Structures are given as C-alpha cells and as structure tokens.
Image (cartoon, rainbow, N blue to C red; front, side):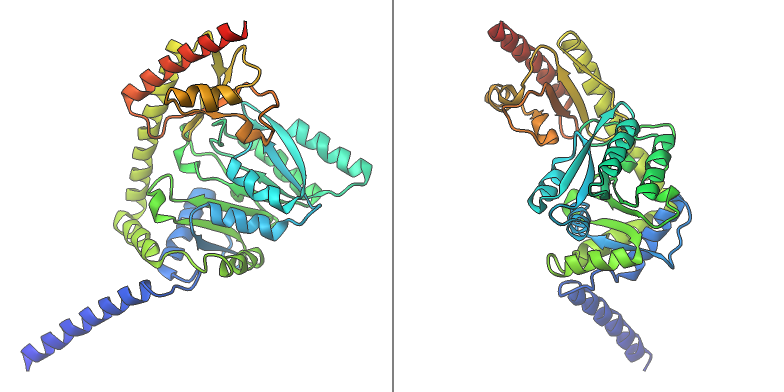
Length: 372
C-alpha cells in the first residue's frame, strides 16, 4: 500500500509537469502568466519607485519592438502630431512613417532631447492654432544612436510640458540596465503622476535577444488597448520564453538579478572603453564624438565629409567594414548632407575593434584625398 501511494504521488507529479509543458506549447493568455507578471511588477517597484498597481499594469510582450509598434498604432492616425528626437532609432521611424502622422523632430545635444527646442516648437503649434501633439517618443537612457542619457532635471521639464500640452510619453528604454552612470537614472515612469507614461523595457539586451521577452508598463486602460493590437498580430508572447525568464528570476532573486546586471554593465563598459581608445588612437584628427553614457553605440561625426552615405554603404562595405550612415537615424534621403555614422561595439572582438578603427581611418583619408 505504501509503495502504491508513493507511485501514485510520483505519477501525479509527472502528469502535472507534462500537462504544464503541453499548455506552454499550445496557447498562453496574452498577459496572464501570473508568476512573471508579479516579478516584473517587483522590478518596476524597486527600480522606478512604488507603482499604483490598481491603476497601472504590466504586460509581457514579444521583445521591446512589439509594444512600441502597438503603442504607435494606438496613438496615431494620419495627421495626428507626434514629437520625436533627432536622430532617432530607425525601428521607431519605420513604424511611424506608414501611418503618415504630422512629425515634429526635436534636436538633441550631449544631454539628449533639447527642451528649449521642444518648448519653442510647442509654442509655435499653439500660436498657429495647429494640431497639438498627442504623443512623444523618447529613448531616454543611452539612446540609439548617440548613447546620451537625459538627466532628471530635463526629464522633469519634458514631463511638465507633456502635462501642459496634454500628450503621452512613450518611454522606450531598452538600454536602461546598460547605463554606465554612477547611479541608475530616474525614469519618466518614476515621476509620472498623471498616468501619461507608457514605458517599454526589454530583456533582449540583458538576457537573450532570442527569448524575445519585453514588457510594457502603462495605465490599465491604455494597456488593454495595446493588448487588442497584440490579439490581431502575435496573439501572445512565447509561453516557453516566459517560463524560462520566470524560473531564472526566481533562481536569482533580487540580489542575483542585480549581480547579473552589474556584470552585464561591466562587460559592455569594457567594450566601450576599448572602442573609445581605438578611436582616440586612429580617428583623433579625422572625427569627433561624445563618449556614450551606456548602450552599445558611438555616434561619430567625420570631419571633412559632408555626406557619408556612399562612403559607408559602398566604400566601407567593399572593405568588409560595417558602419551605419547617419541618414538611417535622421530619416533623410541619401542625397542629403550628413556627416555622422554609428559605430557599434556590441559584438566586436578586441582585435576587430583595433583593425576596424585603423581601416576606417585609412578609408577616411583616402576619401578626403579623392574629394580634394
């Protein structure tokens, strides 16, 4: 009898495990995997301050691009005005363009989006009686491509303008945990008192891009609208990936997660330093740049070249050197002048960084000779 009881318990346990796996391989409710949702709420609470989960919610998404696309689809129609930074992450620009909204592009400096330019453009809209913006997109931490981070005082000015002119803020922050600052920056979510911030996070940069796990934090009415967009696109995020992330976060705990983030930051900081040093050795008199505050990229202005498009896409590619012309981040025609390129240090090996920077310097010199 005792043997039978033990066998029955074992079979029941195995059956439950098999049933769980089967459920993972069929369908998941879009945002209802409770254990992971609870963990993500805890992460947001200790990272961005205690949130009111009666009015806000978290939803798991397929990477960080899905909630961005869904939010843009939700907020925009032809003629609706959106504020974007310039330069801009191409994935956002490519999602916006087919909708044909009215675009206000705001310049950036070493501290990110310029609030003086933003305020000026908003006043122009109001004085002309034209359509006021409904939404602003911003990548506030180690933004792609410039690597700059918006400081808190500037965030507060931007948020106050959002309240005054009544627009939403799409806070797309995939590089938040890859910042190299002494202290993690305060987010727009952390200062949101009116429920006008939709924040997008991603595990792609800190765990695995192949898992395709991101999450969006927003007021519940907006979250439900984003959910409707997901229901007619991806349906739901991979259940297997959600459970993997849940089990990993459970095993780590808060201290383990923070330890992992610290190690990831150190990994990318070393890569950044290596590329900065290589640029200083080989490109010092040929280009200029600001040291990034995090992320994976350096935004470089090449001196003496008014238009780098064909240099980057033909000359450099022809020598097996991959750099991205700034045109991709400005949304301008290849014939338009732009002297910026984006360099990435995320995948490059040490010898590749040194070789690549030396080759880039040689190619710039050759191009300048041809130009003369």
